[in-house]
Image (cartoon, rainbow, N blue to C red; front, side, top):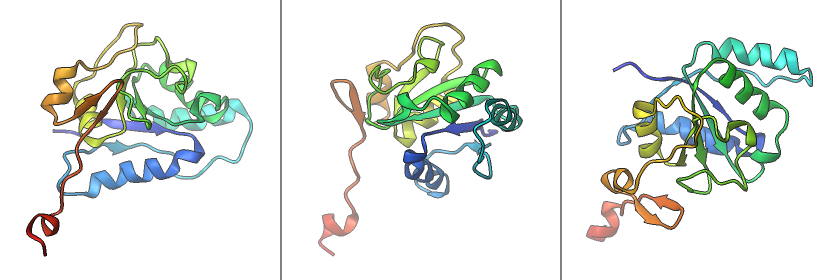
Length: 177
């Protein structure tokens, strides 16, 4: 199966979440992978047209745009917003990944640019992101989220707006080694 070509946008304060997501690709026991179309170097510019042009070069390679949504993402009116605008212009699939584990859109943190455009919203977790990369193909104006049965099928525990997978207990703890 070919990997979804994906551009991941995020606030600079969320770089460690992005790095963790990249590490999932290398972990042999997690069924998660994507073809990363990230910009190789930070753009030191305030010029919107220049930044959008550089983003367009990478997003043109992608069919999917993932936005990592943290506590300050909503207030990012330059780079994050500009990347999303280019992804929308290029008609990419949009997946909003909530770092607060919400499985729906969280209006308090989600940037308006990806609200009500047919984006899928999932919590930050490799199994559900992998599922969304494989299954989300929406082309309508509403926000999307997966039904409870998808999460339970993938091993998640649901708690209100949030979904979490139980942490695996290391064998050393089970067998006392």
